[in-house]
Each structure stands twice: as structure tokens, then as C-alpha cells.
Amino acid sequence: MNNSAKKAFIAFVIGMVFMFVLDMVFHFNNSVEKQLERETNKAGKKIENLFKK
Image (cartoon, rainbow, N blue to C red; front, side, top):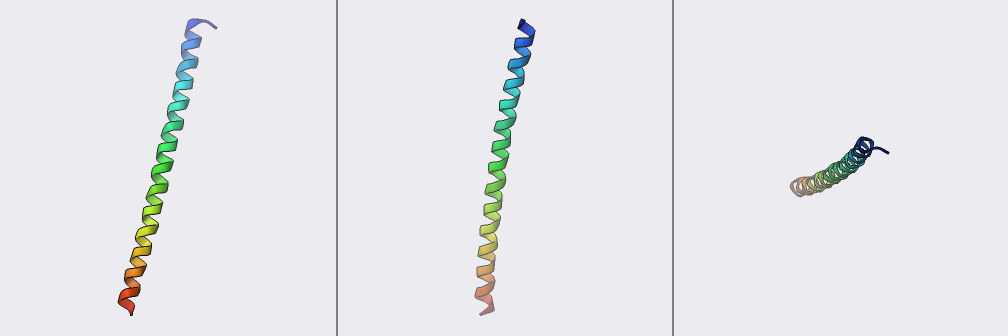
């Protein structure tokens, strides 16, 4: 492999790793957001049930 092909390959691998890390971060962020939404819905239902009594 000549020098420019080697640089292109390394840039490609670094790009793939970067995209993978970003995907993991956004997936984690999304799952945290969904969990918070579930907890607020639960709390809202409990408050509604208190006022219904």
C-alpha cells in the first residue's frame, strides 16, 4: 500500500469509530430521555389518583 492509500484507510477507520461513538452517545441519551418520560408519567398518574379520591 502506498502512503496516500494508507492515510485514506486510517481516516476511514477513524471516521467509522467516531460515528460508532456518536451513535452510542445518542442511543444512551434517547434511552435516558424515555426513562425520564416514563417516570414523569408514573408520577403524574399517582398525583391524579390522589386528587380523584
